[in-house]
Length: 130
Image (cartoon, rainbow, N blue to C red; front, side):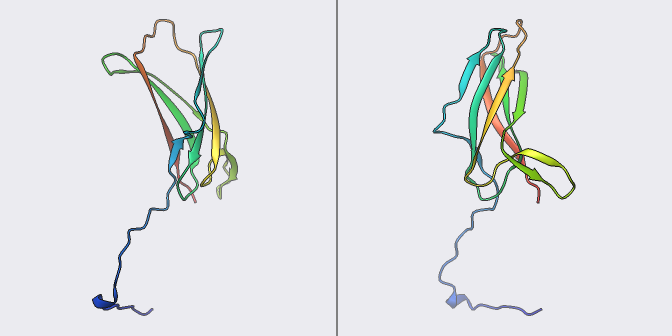
């Protein structure tokens, strides 16, 4: 295999390349709906969008409930309803999001009556598989 040598005076510009990876965010054009159900459970309904340049695999939305002293007191999550994917090892998933595509999520959480939380945070996690 050969080598390529470029003289410094012939290089006129060096640009950084954006990494080829998923970038998942909650879709800003779709408001996340919060429903308080008859059984006092809470349902969150929303949408995630992949603004990156690679497929996100096994995408899930995680909600964290926090006490007033910033201690975590409850966490729950759900996988998104995305595209179907069959991986080389035979595993089948319906939680993948291709670049520029969206996927919806519905997370139903039953909190104990004794649980008092001060605030909620949410995030998105995913894996990358070839």
